[in-house]
Image (cartoon, rainbow, N blue to C red; front, side, top):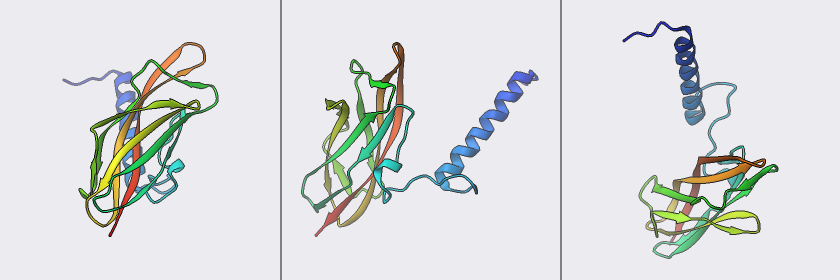
Length: 161
């Protein structure tokens, strides 16, 4: 089926541009566009949303020793946490299988007008291990604009001997 509608052609071109921009941000391939932040950079550069500032503490622990990584989402001015939503992090993975996670999903709790997530991790081998996951959180803007967003969790767990 072929669509000759000008609106469809415009949307197709727009989707292609967004796809190229997403690839360029992911792989840092386009000049003039910022490369995606790496886990070694400060956590405040790792994930941004219109509503939240994301802060993640990288963790260092002896191999086989349990540790807790803290991820904190603070609402920006004009935004509030959607308290009735099941704010959570899930889909944890380690790039090199160097980390095990206590749970498949971690719910956030409210603390000082912030969402706090306590992620149980255990390094399984020495070295630095990039990990990631997906925040799924809600926010309120103004009096009634409710939104739910997905944000990346990107951090490092370092195993020592």
